[in-house]
Length: 187
Image (cartoon, rainbow, N blue to C red; front, side):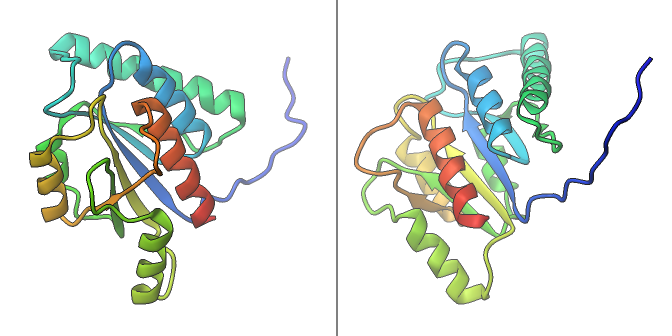
């Protein structure tokens, strides 16, 4: 027999961050989903990019997405996160970028020259809008980063290239680092 000893309302975060993550090799995506859930991502979208080395078809793709949803549930329980992120079906990079218009701020982690800092992008947004962005989209590339053509397509669709510092981070490290610093800056 169970009895409720305490209940409390958990207000939603003042922001919603979507992680568009190009599929990394091996089981790394499992860890990205787990950690992204722990730091409060609202949505995680696995992406197939030009340099993605993992290619999942029909049944395998559906099974992976279900596994990631289970991973997110387990992570949410473990860390006490009452807000489960939506785990979207696997999408192509091109389709996702072209349908990304409903975000206040769109960012893409970049190893290419000319990228700005997150601090600068957020300051610019606040200057022009008078408040912090509420709906933010972060794109994180696969091993080897996004291709130049993908970077051009993202910039054309309104994404700002953001540097994650002077070191080249692994795909999983980049995802969690990007989500963590953005979440910190928006809270």
